[in-house]
Image (cartoon, rainbow, N blue to C red; front, side, top):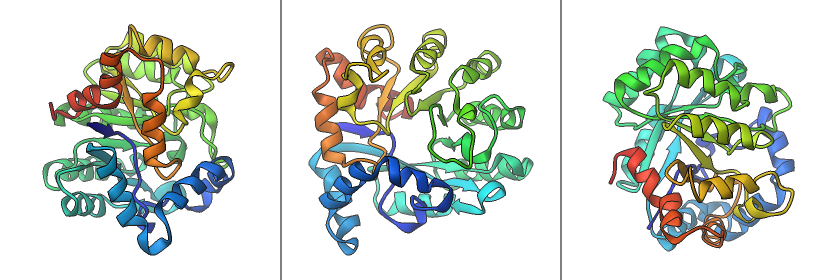
Length: 286
């Protein structure tokens, strides 16, 4: 049994192929092609996507809304994500997306998404909002996460949009947030490259920071000089309770991603935590 903490269904409403993210198509060309090949033609992709989760015995899959209207005029609505999750219940769990530039309107929309639509967390891709992780404009949203008792996913790594700054996702910025909001539960993903050890340090300091291993082929985590090697070492020991796994579909095929993560040199009980237990505890589905 597994939980995929990061996935986007093959539907246009999830906004994978939009202009400011076009450079991702270059970077992930081969792995996206492998995912598409595994799912067949466009008319069959959703059915194949759902079947892939049957094949890996997925208990839950996290899908996320996103609002970047202020910066890029784009939005995957909370209502759409909630509807998708209801249509494919109980496997799919939705996270809300709001635009922090909208101030109190964003706070109200987030609260509505959790209390009325049944979404279970908040998604912040700070680089797409063109603000840093520790920007004070985000603080009311962090406080609301604590009030609503839901986690937040925060992009904490390189991004490949050349219309946005890399620096906005630097993991060290998360340390200030956690000092101010120690009760906040954060999934920092992707896992920090090229600042992997920074993210490890932040997670080691703050027990409520989870590292989301997503948007990277698991086989590269132990590749020599990849920069990810410390993640396997610490994730197999002191951070074993703070790692969750996500395929970031369609950036890679679902089945292949889980095959590769299971091939990592992790202790059996730690492997179970990576692919299921930690996410179950974080989502409250133990």
